[in-house]
Image 1 (cartoon, one colour):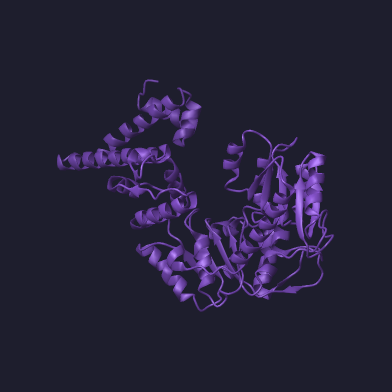
Image 2 (image 1 turned 30 degrees about the vertical axis):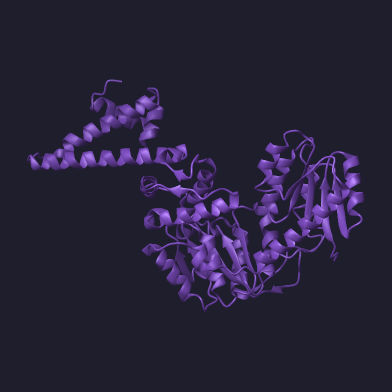
Length: 467
């Protein structure tokens, strides 16, 4: 197997490819050139280079689209973007989250060599940090709410074991952080921690990603490749969104959990591994078992210990602490001053529903760090969707309070059979508003209400609603 670092170049201009190849031939790297981005994307399914250099404007696919596709499949590969256009500032700002660096044309050949060397070192350092990462639970998971204390206790109780763990919780609650903490406080903490989102990888690539493949196992498999199980040998493999794993791979996973061995794609020799599996899902696996979408025996294998990560609405006392933490990290990350929450804004944010949980909270802190005009965060500085959430919530609360007072008042007055009075008025308002929303179309209005069209027609007649 070739131990040389590999650099891939994609540019539709043959002369640019030639110049880059000549410049990089001075260094000890293997070079592959592509005139079409599509050819590179086909090869990256079976191989992973150390660095990619791409033009920004090419026929068929631009550099931004190519960058996004590369990051989806191989997020650790540094991508250097070349550009010769005046919209450089806009391009660079778009790439800051993904591209390693940009290379303006015309470029200096010595600069190219230096940039490629830095990119190779960057990838190697990142890989080492990722594989041998030791996570400090005190700094990576924040929370004093009782629901989070239960999570901390579970991590503590499991600190001396290698048991398989199933982490449940809504999207964005921080399940991967819990998995990292379980690994960091386990006997395997000095070994590899590998995370993979099974829902983010296409079904036909997932098998090779997990188990690796032999050379020639399929078209484009030009060399042997280790899968995630081999990479995690001796350590921990975190399988996120396990509920989306295809049925045939569930069977293969069950074999590994029960026997500790597997075959690479196209392989005939069993490979033994010692891997602790931590799985996570936002779905109800028991319900998926009933629907024959998930193997019951696999669920039992995974569900040795279950840890539930609570949604943010069940740990509201942690919201301000989390916001202050994320505001500090966002300021450092974006090279901005640390924004301060005003008390009124803090109260406002504490009552929001936060449907996206901690992930939404973190993204909000990044947004407000850039967008808030002053050093203090006012309610007017919040993004429109958060203001809208609060308005909807306040209206909902107000309606319930008003209705409750009406019920209490009616009962105090000695009214009887209040349902006979309330239900028709309630249904009449719902029907009129649904018809207003649908422009008078009964078919659409019935769908909004969750009724059949005949039921709606009967109710309109029964309640003598003028349509």
